[in-house]
Amino acid sequence: MKRERFLIFALILGCGVFLFWNLGERPLWGVEGRWAEGVREMILRGDWWVPTLNGVPHITKPLIPYWLIRLAALVFGGLNEFTVRLPVALCAAGTLGAFYFLARTFFEPFWALTATGLMATTWGFVAYARVAQSEIYQLFGITAALAFYFRFRERESLWGYLGFWLSAVFAALSKGLPGLVVPLMIAALELFWRRNFRHLNPKNLTVGLLALGLYFGHYYALSRATHSELPFYLFFRENVLQAVSPYDNREPFYVYFYYVPLLLLPWTPFFLVGGLWAVRGWRRISEAEKLVLLAIGAIFILFTLARARRSYYILPIVPLCLLVTTAYLRRALREPDPLSRALFYLYGLLTFLLGLGAVLLPFLWPHAGLPFPLKLAVGFSGLALLLALALCMAWDLAPWGLIWSYLIAAICGLALLTPQLTPPSEKVFGRALRKIARAEKTSPCALGKVSANLLFYLSWPEPVPSFRKPEELSPSCRLVFFREKFYKKEGRIKEIVKERGLRLYGLPARWRSRDENKNYLLASPSEVPSEDLRPCP
Image (cartoon, rainbow, N blue to C red; front, side, top):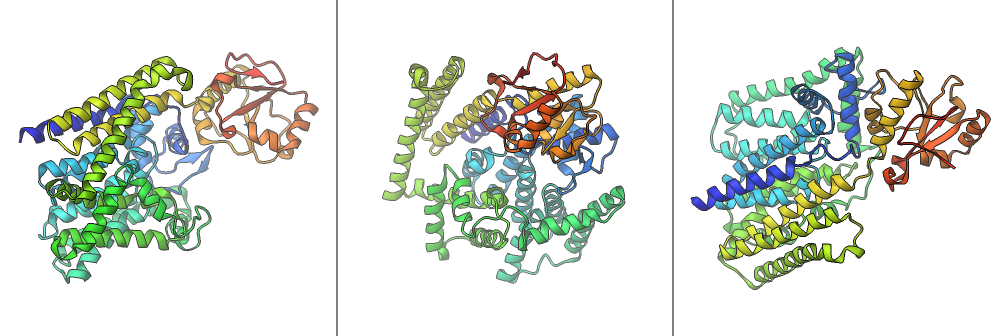
């Protein structure tokens, strides 16, 4: 029991550091700005229902992430990178808690904690746990729904039904219909496979109808707020048409044979061997384990048949795959065979080399493009990794040496290095442009496609005039900004800049991103009073 208490404390501490340390340090990245800017404009209008981007309704996604971000901003007194990401980090912590309770229905406490450690270090989790996107919201809801289902599957429990349905609705109102479909599909699998009709009872049906009413009521309320049927059309387009006739995200039908192993890294080999072992030993595994295997197959087929495919779409398969992985690890450590021994020795060697390489990094500084303080931090992380590996081997806590090593690597890579090494090009440009526009007492004008990240950092109190083509640019626009890549592509912009006698300004080298889509230029008729922008040659 002392061992489990120590592991619980250590896991909570390690995951807390990973999820919350430097959470607000990294500039908005990827599509994070859609959520941040959507909430910012909702706050400006005092609206809770219709997120907008530059004044245009953006309701392709459900509202729960927007609401949670806004609540975080209210609690902490401001909307910034930290409050935008805080809800997803809390949902990530909730995912780990829900997964522990799910694993407890299969394993004793030590192995349930081990399964949670696997989840905390799996790429499909760590890649999204600190990013303001809807994937972890959905994963939390689905994992919680599965935890309620497997815990109460042999009982007719009102609390079990409430937990299952509300968790599934939370998932669906965070990202989309798959959040509701996946848990229901798993329940339907058991219903038809085992002929278990216990849960077709008035309590479950009543709670289910209320939950579905809550789900569709969200779209009804949104349609009333927008005074249109657009929310229902977007629901149909994003959840039905996107599956059968997608307008984007088209990838080959076989792509999930690549994405699922990628999401399960670094535990992929253990899952593949464990899955093969479970299928070959079908008769000796429990009914619950059989249901997990069937659910993995059903989820894989469902998302493969859907014609819109992305790596994060199939993220709900990860918790179930890790249950199979944990079952194999438990068997392999109790009854080791040559293959399991080889896997453990290989992982131990590779992890040792990873730690050793991190320790040696400060001494190889000419060959690594990192500032010396970061190299030193990486070196200390390598020492911590090697120490964790050695202590867990000495205390006979396999596979916790690997788990701790990968958690330390995740902390170093995603909580330490990534925030420090992400160029703040959009943040610096947006804030500089805001100062210039305020000083000039004029609204800046956008030309071409502009990211929501930049709009968030610009934080203009009203929609920014936006023009798709250079020919449409209004003569009254004194401050015009556009992407550097757009400027190089559209020759007409250069002509307009020359005709109007505009000067071009851009970011100095230290703020620039390698991605030209994140670098912007400003065209102004006069010299701009900014320390962060430099005249372009």
